[in-house]
Amino acid sequence: MTAEAAAAAVADASGQRVDKFLWFSRLTKTRSEAQKLAESRRLRIDGRVVTRASATVRIGSVLAFTRAGAVRIVRVEALAERRGPFAMARSLYSDLTEE
Image (cartoon, rainbow, N blue to C red; front, side, top):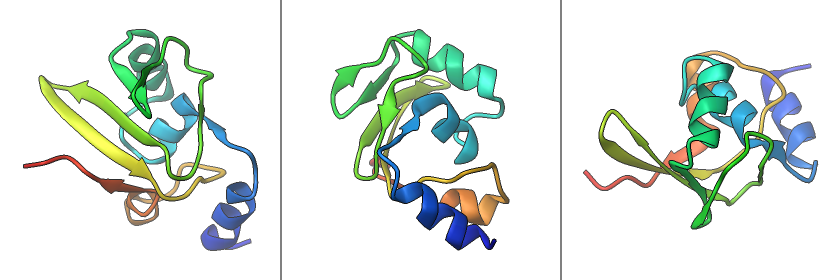
């Protein structure tokens, strides 16, 4: 199964855990780092504060969080089944952060 086919198969699902999405999309280095971010109350999904790593993210969801003192805003474009190379991971989201 190709990476595109795997992403399309997951896209048909209802959603994905936010910690998995952050790790698969390489927005965090480790899944435990993604879990800590979600539980720290520094992450928002569509404007609501996230308090648990199992919160669901869907295609079209907007994530806002702080990293190294800067606010990062991304929109979910696709979901994946596994953590892949950077090029595939970068296609999972659009960066909305104003620079």
